[in-house]
Image 1 (cartoon, rainbow, N blue to C red):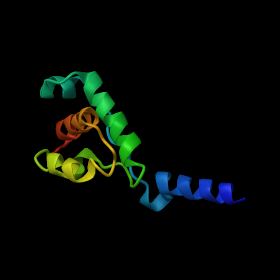
Image 2 (image 1 turned 120 degrees about the horizontal axis):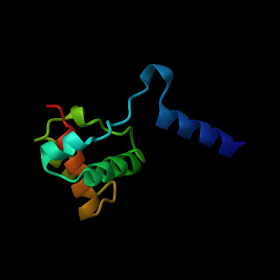
Image 3 (image 1 turned 30 degrees about the horizontal axis):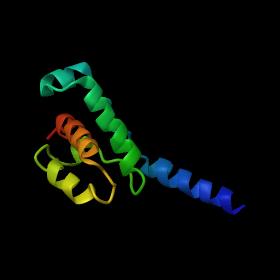
Image 4 (image 1 turned 135 degrees about the horizontal axis):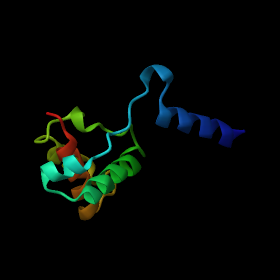
Amino acid sequence: MKRFALAVLVAASVGGGAGCARRSPPMASASDAQRANIELAELQQGRSLLIGKCTNCHKAPMPSDHTAAEWPKKLDEMSARANLDYMQRSLIEKYLVTMSTR
């Protein structure tokens, strides 16, 4: 019973309630990659890492949550907590900076 309750709690925190559900970070397109002069596969890996690493503690951040200039500092603050190695941090940063709309 405890495992079921824990599973329900985890599902609720990851998925959010109906009133506070949040979209997934946007998929990168070939035009996004071309605009940033980055391989599309790198942007896709960055998005996957963002979802996989960041959602262990909170909802996945949206690229539009901060400006492209703000993302590197935000990642500096969170990299150690998320146990990101240099390559993982770099891929997440490329994704967030490229996909940021501000």
